[in-house]
Length: 419
Image (cartoon, rainbow, N blue to C red; front, side, top):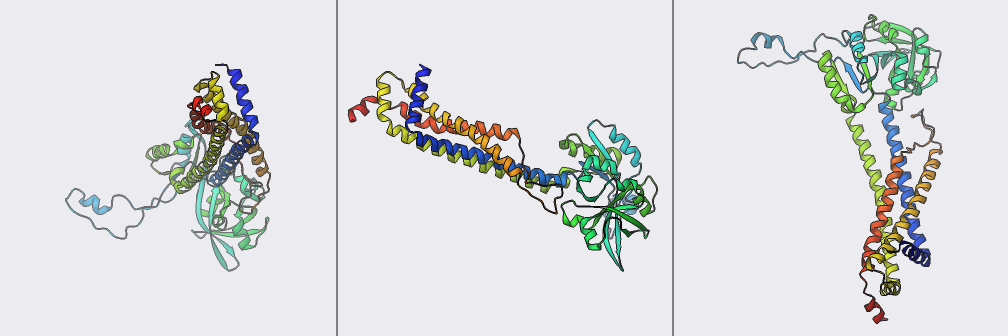
């Protein structure tokens, strides 16, 4: 087999039908371009939506849940007898929301090499006083530095400096929705009343916007000390321990481990946001399906073009086989034509796809609900380009294989006799 000669014949056949070849290459180029750009955009959008949850949600949350005691007094008194107990209106235990020994628990978790960081938190209901009206709210007492390191708190503070929450005593950062409802500005003072009736005057040092309007209308943030003061509790009062891991996939197993070890409730991020995670997977599947469909459609176009080329080149194929070329040689010629179209069109498509992605990445996209986003999100994952390049070659190879198989079986005697 003379590969140089077969190459020259393949080039001649390509140039002889250059318009059809160009159309086939453009089809592959367009498919790869849209495949890369579509996956980059859809994955970037998924990352954006995931970020709204992942950036603000701990991988594992430790807390105390208000629930009745598992064993009631009547069960303790008559538990050994073969009796049935009918109990109604069972009230929760007096355990309270505080995590006992929170400091020791956090030290033990920090020593775990699987853990990226730990941030304490206090969550409490409260009321914002607006004239004679009280607005229901949720006050979050946080360790400002750790909250920012682990959950990017500063990215969501749209007015003011998040560090003022730590440096200014009796300060608060309000959700943008709550601030607009109360008509307050940075520097104003608002009165906050806890569920225990404690009233505290707090200075507004900033506004935050999470991207979820229902949250922004009720939530606010203070320092841990301010929250403890508001609730009339001591310095060891903590209601939540937030854990961030190096590997988020370990969260379900570690949540069960911590729950058993520390005797508190533990919920992992996968369980808490299972519906959201399912939506991301569905969007990714749809993106890959549409992209691969484009490539398959382009493959059918190449198949039809090569079929027409074989039909029009019957004489040339007959002469090749009559002059000593085997069926395998003929098959190699037409497969090489198809793969050449795939390589050229695929390579140009990858470049065009990157260019289109970069263009989309520069289009302004500013919305009040997403303060950290300035342009449309794009994911430049190298795997998209690798998948696109490999698939373009495979698609064109199989598109050329079947016509090439047909061409290799042509009987030159039948063709020449017919002429």
